[in-house]
Length: 220
Image 1 (cartoon, rainbow, N blue to C red):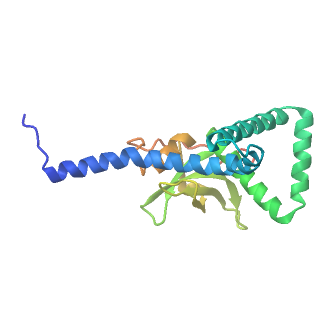
Image 2 (tube, helix red, strand yellow; image 1 turned 30 degrees about the horizontal axis):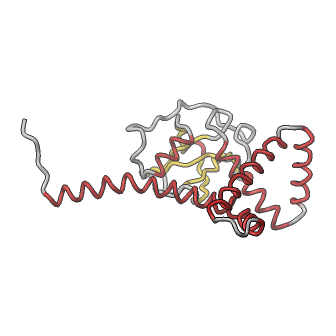
Image 3 (spheres, rainbow, N blue to C red; image 1 turned 120 degrees about the vertical axis):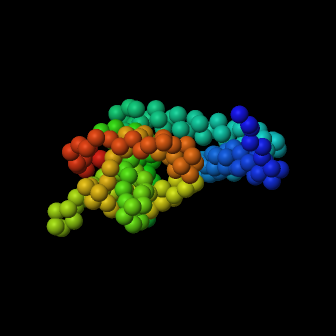
């Protein structure tokens, strides 16, 4: 059996493609962690630098990171106790009285809950449906159901974009025109972020079941 040899141009192209497949996921991961770092540690750093004015920047960054981790741990501990949950509930009710703050907090909380919830019969589901025209398929995250005045039930589906799934748009799809996939949210996001490279050879369609209600699918 003869082995097919690549021309120098083909070899260079293959090396570039391999490099892109290695570096793009790393770059996306670095970007996400940079955003998270700036939103958390970046907010604490000015205060840390003020207190530790004559310390090296690396040390102030490390101290800021430790402070953020302590705050996260404290918040988690607070939320696990009855008194803490009541205090958090009181804070949420106060935020609900502030128009802009209420909208931002409520939306961000629901997004975090959506990403945290695992895909189970009682939780979030991944749907496959025709989009933008019949014959073309799109995949999205089901966040609940809604009905039109004529009684037709629609899935509320978020369609993430590739390769950055933190952006996307909302689509309403009739429940009889969508197929629920037997796929976890983690596998679905890997599939989307890799532009379909990291995915199954066949869509694992879940057997047809009763239409989930908004009780089974928490409001998004």
